[in-house]
Length: 182
Image (cartoon, rainbow, N blue to C red; front, side, top):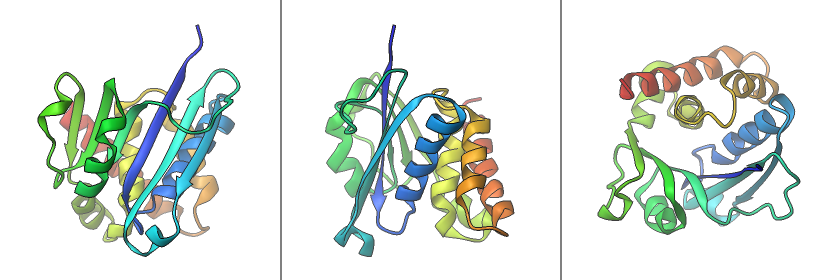
């Protein structure tokens, strides 16, 4: 039986969500040998307003690269949550920054509340690593894309001589997920 899985990363311009989406798409397509399509919304958003990126993963050809129903929603701002919660599927998972207020309409779904910005600042000294911390977290709670594949895609995409800080951020997110799921 075929599968189609949709991920939406949403927050504000500057969170690095487009980079994160490209890493996930490459991890799925290149290193996990799945079909993947990535699309993003940026423009005026790049100056700090709402931003989003989507990844569709399938074991068959992807005829439409936009997400129909979201299986995994990652939100880093309240605005992102408010704008996208309605697109989450009934069995979907929410991964939200801990400042985001989660409403009643998500009953029965997996919900993770994580201090992504604080982890990025504490573990890496760089809040800009929030996207990579989130990828580390997502790799633990979602088994659609392999952890090693995500790590390989990170290393292939990040600036040379900065691989250590990116892997450190990834591992910090992964550890946060393991601790939260205990």
